[in-house]
Image 1: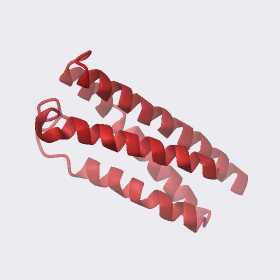
Image 2: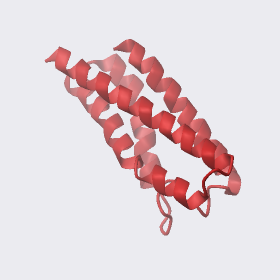
Image 3: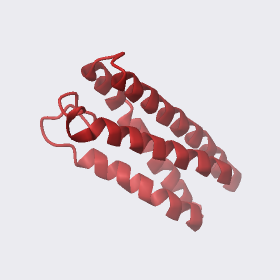
Image 4: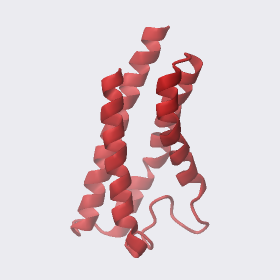
Length: 128
């Protein structure tokens, strides 16, 4: 049972690393004007829910298998993903909105968030 939990968590962690790199590449393409804001936000919004599910899956697995230390480390990231998804204003396209991504430094904050998540997932992979 414990081996299966950690194998699923490792695969999930690798998928989340891939998603973080994908977010960074797509946001940097927007920053360099290789793609427009609507295409960028459309691409990224498709992957917000799978990222949320992946992070929540690992958190729930650690809760069920009673690995408290890893649970405590994963809980803030899962809570942040849920908060970010729930707090999308009405009328926006999703977490990434093309009309607001260039306003108020949202592009930089999204890029910083993706970098922090990439670092977190790389460190988390070392635990498994």
